[in-house]
Length: 154
Image (cartoon, rainbow, N blue to C red; front, top):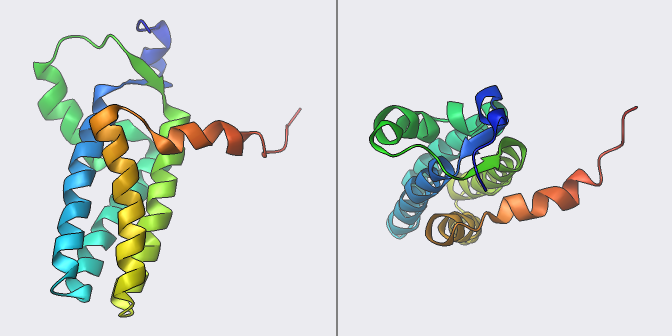
């Protein structure tokens, strides 16, 4: 897909940004699972920080999320112009889904329910790794199904 003029309006983003964020997220969630073998509390704190990152991405979009800001300031200037873009709305929804799993995992770890925390983190890790390694955004694929459930406003 070539870059349309709508990229200037903020409705589309360079696909490399969300993939960069997915790689960072994959690393953070892997750390959570490794730390969980030693301490549920520390795993909960690290996952809580990732939950905040997900919440910011869901609320403000991929450009204004922490990982998106790092990509925009440090990585993107070193790359060629984008050749592929993707819409922001499905990415925000994917961040919301990530937030839900991270929030469940955080609460579970902090309450001592490590198994639930590991499972929730594992689901988020699976989705992040799919996007990072294969460019397949699971939340983005679910978005159109959920969007159909919204009431139509005239």
